[in-house]
Amino acid sequence: MKRYSASVNFNLEDAVEILTRTPATLAVLLGGLSEPWIRANEGESTFSPFDVVGHLIDADETNWLPRARVILEAGSSFQAFDRFRHRSRNVGRSMESLLGEFSNLRAANLEMLKTWQLTSDDLERIGTHPEFGAVTLQQLLSTWVVHDLGHIAQIVRVMAKRYASDVGPWAAFLPILKDRAPQN
Image 1: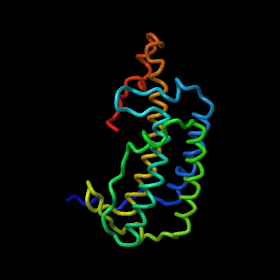
Image 2: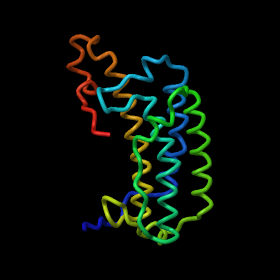
Image 3: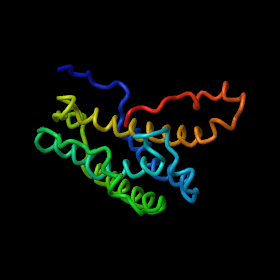
Image 4: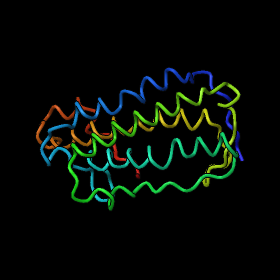
């Protein structure tokens, strides 16, 4: 089992800067948009912007802090994360309701994280991921930040591709239209 070395870049305050901004970024980008924008996707089994926000809510509820608690309290194994829970959970909901829920949940989670007053020793504590094996709290928190940024990029890419066939010859200069959707 590969053990990754400690970070040279991670800083909790820097991480929180991004995590704090994600809900507002998504609210500005997606709030009030019509269904064609928020329901667009890149094909079967890919996420629309609506799906991404639901997925981020699920991750904030069942992934990041619950796993951090496992690391801090016992260092035992994590529960598997259902990356598709949002599909059944959010049927009939509006984007505005998801954005509001995400904003409230993220604020509460970051407030909780702040109360933990994590030390550098805490960040090196280990839990067991069901697929990856031993992971540190710092790796988990770093992944939370990159996960947010990756899904913001995904939303923008999906929205851009809505007009992929309409840009004509400019497509050659728009690399966002060539990016492929990763497996969710």
